[in-house]
Structures are given as C-alpha cells and as structure tokens.
Length: 253
Image (cartoon, rainbow, N blue to C red; front, side, top):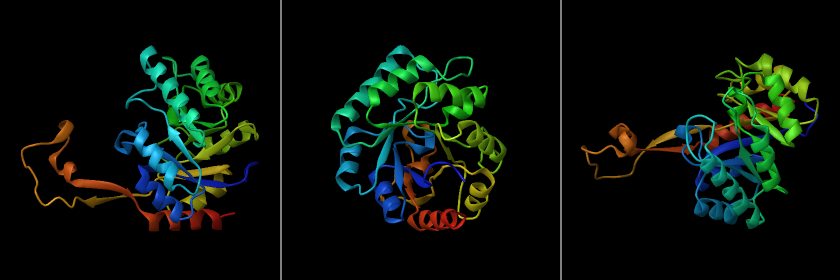
C-alpha cells in the first residue's frame, strides 16, 4: 500500500452532499458545483454554509468553466481571486486546481502561482492530470510546483482500466506526492483497485438521480438548452452507497 495514511474523499455537489458524505464516514470532501460538467467552482454562499455544517475537512474545486484546462489570462486571474478569498476565510482545508499548456503539459508557472496563493491550504491537482501528454513528466512537474496530491484515473475513463498507470504513478511518486485514485469506483470494484494499485487515497462520487418535487412543470422550456426532462431531476449523493463503498475499500487493507 501507499506511503501516506489511507483516506477516502467524496466528490459532492453542494452542502447537502457534504452532509451525506460525512454521515457515511468519509475522511474528506471535494466541494463542487455542476458535476454534470465535471465539477465547477461552488458559490461563496455554498462554501460558507459548508464551513458551518462540516465536521470533516473539505477541499474546494477552483474551475471557472467546463471544457479544457487551457485558461485565458482573465480566467486565470479569477482563479487566483477565488483562492485568495478562500485563504482569507481561514477555515477552508484545501483547493483543487489544474492548468495545462496547449501541448498537454502541466503549466508550471501558473500552478506554482496558484500553490503560493493557496498556502497554508492543501493543494490537489484534479483530473487535468489525466489529460496530459506524459503522466510521468506531469508527476515530476507537480512535485516541483509543491502540489500535495493528484487525482487520477490512470489516464483512462475508469480506475479499473487505468490500474497499470495508477500503480506506476504510485511508484514514480515514491511518497513525494499523494496519488488519489478515482474513476467509476463503487462497492463492487474499489477493493480490487486498491489492492492492484496501492494508491494512497481514493475518490468517488456515488451519485443518484431523484425526480423533482415540482408539481407544476412547463413543457415548453428547457433551461440552458438541456433536455426538458433534466429540469425535473435532482442529482444527489447516495449516503448508503458511500457507506458501502467506503467499507469495501477499508476491508481491502
């Protein structure tokens, strides 16, 4: 197994998800908005409410938009501003970032600037890592930048498919940076991935979709160009699934 204490992080959308994750025994939460886009920066109000109710640490994703991780100067400046605001709150445990260059490398200048702005908060590189041209070079770049951990599915859609790269990443990291495995993890496969890869930490979402409680539904409007049916669905963290998956992961020790 890895060289760091084993921990499980749950990716959630909003404060209700944080509450479900901590009730289910998570060690930490990644707090996001819009998981349908892979996770965007949550609002200030969501973060403040999370601080009020949290009994476990949470890290806030800093991602101003969906799509790629090649940001304009204005977008990058907004990321710096978000991080500064969180640091000044004094109680947020960490931030989750990721900036790439056009040729698929870690943007070291920007990453170092974000890390420096974030301290003393912890810093995780999100799955922008999985979009890099060479994961070995990317690990070394993140170590040079002072990043604490990297979230990765082994550059594949799922952790099961990426298990060989996850295992190699742990070996390359050699304790210098935490390797946090992710990618369609659930109670049926998380033990296998932990045993095969030796990752330091594991991350999953365990989401379920509920029907909206709205009794009036306008059949003529789909907000943001989405399917109308999606307006009347709510995605939430499944507390029972989180608990079962955590139990399976810990049993694999």
